[in-house]
Length: 97
Ligand SMILES: [Zn+2]
Image (cartoon, protein in one colour):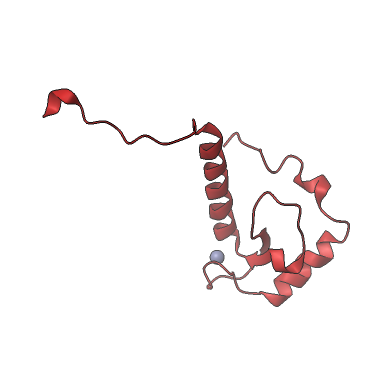
C-alpha cells in the first residue's frame, strides 16, 4: 500500500505525554473495543484525522482490528477525494433490452 496519507505527519503532532495516555487507555480497555475478543495492543483514534488525543477520543484495540479500521478509513478517504460530486447510477445498456 503506497499511501501514507495520515501517518506522515501524525507522529510529530502527538502530545508529549502520548506514551502515558496510550498506556492509560490500554489499562482501561485491556480488551479490544472493536472485536471484544483479543487483547488491546494499540490505541485507536475513534474519529480518524483529528488531533484530539483525549481519553474519550481514544480506544484500546487489537492490532488486526486497528489495521482493518485504518485500511477502511484510508479507502473512505480516497473514495471521498476521488468522488466527482455526486454519484450516478449506472445506466442500462440500450442494446440489452
Ligand atoms: Zn479486535
